Amino acid sequence: MLTKLYGILPSPPVRSVLLCASALDIKLDFININLLEGEHMKQDFLKKNPQHTVPVLEENDGFIVSDSHAIMAYLVSKYGKDDSLYPAKDLKRRAIIDQRLHFDSSTLFTRAVLISKPLLFENIYPSKERLDALDETLNIVDQILATNNSGYIAGDQLSIADFSFITSLTASNLFVPYSKFPNIKAYIDKMEKMPFYKENVEGLSLLHELFRPKLKNNP
Ligand SMILES: N[C@@H](CCC(=O)N[C@@H](CS)C(=O)NCC(=O)O)C(=O)O
Image 1 (spheres, helix red, strand yellow):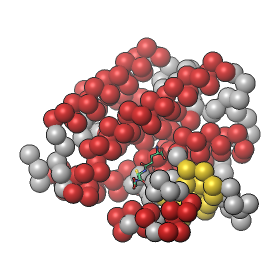
Image 2 (tube, helix red, strand yellow):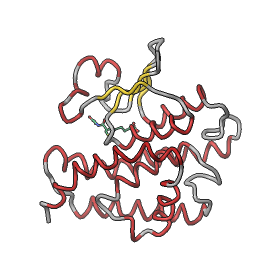
Image 3 (cartoon, helix red, strand yellow):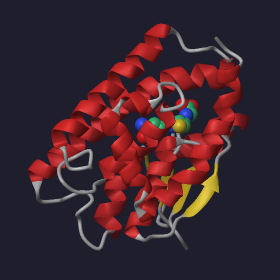
């Protein structure tokens, strides 16, 4: 039996795990959890993840781990042919990747969610403060990419941090267009050409379909 991944395609962190699985060339059994119908609040799912978020990974021996960043680190360590996407022994490279993963968790994805969640569930249009906070974050990402100057978000090669950033950035584009951030634009153009990127396409377009009508009807 395949390892299970609980999620929903429009979710950026779910897609990060799918990009990672594709880069590792592993198949997962995808189980849809419809957040819009509240399936993440049902007892069966809450037993797996009391935080009621997707993605959640479940191994056949009953091992369960949630959070896309933790899941990707686990998948590389357990199933990777090598550890290049998340090094076990190169501590300095791993520290930089960890910094980016925490930045995504604490700031980039979170600031986008502070806009998307009220809009999706309560039709609350984002305040200027929230849009400015996301704009400020994208400016930081643009600077990281400029300083790094490798085409990757951490160090000079592909890592799991790229899977987090590419899904968070392409989702944030709904609210703050990245056209004014040249390094983000170049980064996305580069990632779109990578073989694993195909896993981002359908979910991203579903996310845009969900939000576009809501954004059109607001100031
Ligand atoms: N840091 C988490 C964030 C996961 C997350 O917030 N997922 C959203 C969907 S994009 C969710 O499940 N929201 C439902 C909820 O918060 O109840 C990760 O990377 O997995």
